[in-house]
Image (cartoon, rainbow, N blue to C red; front, side):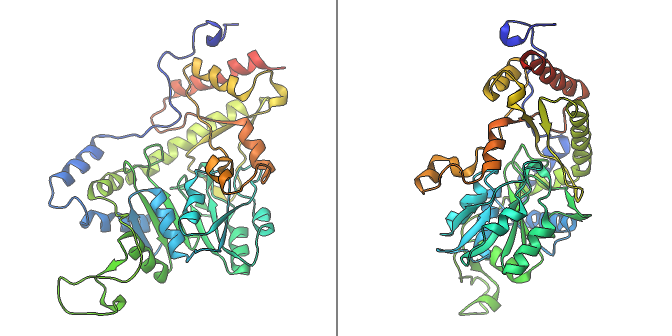
Length: 397
């Protein structure tokens, strides 16, 4: 057997593969260039066009496009009325923004544990963490798989809670045949370059509730409106606008909107390829006892953002770090998603302790993300599989 690259052997790949990468073609470039040649760079017609496209895609009644996914979460938390003293339940296995948006509003994040097979928030753990102070739930569609939304919605209805679905990973995913974006009270999206479609940065919030929509619009644009029905001092003066609430400058630019509109035309193509990649990985890894693949609930027709490989440490002689380094030496650049949010030092200073979510903490100690993006070739995928199998063979007990 060939030696591992870390032992001085020949790596599987000379040109490294990153775990994620955007795909930009000439139609995307031209869409942005045309915007730069136009009269509007911000607050123009492409924003409204994009918001309609996202409504058509998701089935939502309303959409507000914003500057990034974190901004989307923030204004959703604001629209939900989260304030000091409120508790909001979320998952620890997510990017910190899913919890930080609660802090922005003065609320307290409460972390529910994950399902150890799907890695999404466990509805039973949500129920167990509800108190009289609970105001909302932020359920994350981790890796692109929809959270188990039916039981979560039932819990929220029973306790009078607002459900915010963090769909940063899951554009294109459907739950029981219904597109993500039209199921929760509010759904937030991110269009960072490693996501399925990108605006460079960018985000959006969708909802079917007109009152929530009006709050979102105000929150993303300084709390300022030209809608006379919302003003305390309406006037016919054409220049007049009025700050009627508290808000931020979270507006998306015209060229971000143009890029995302172009990318959305390729979403079906991107989704199909991502599903092919996941199927190939699952077939390659499902019979290897040293690793575990992510289980999917049957309700989720998933467009996957991340492919998670979970190591059974008791069957290997290496640590997760050694496995990570060995992959890198083979030319496969993986990543770890995510450190449990409450393990971050900032959350430690807020009083959060380790041990809150045992399933999440065990998950974190064993996982890494493999390359998953549209432009991966079949040869690239075989290189990933070969590298993983090579390292497992070397370190198996």
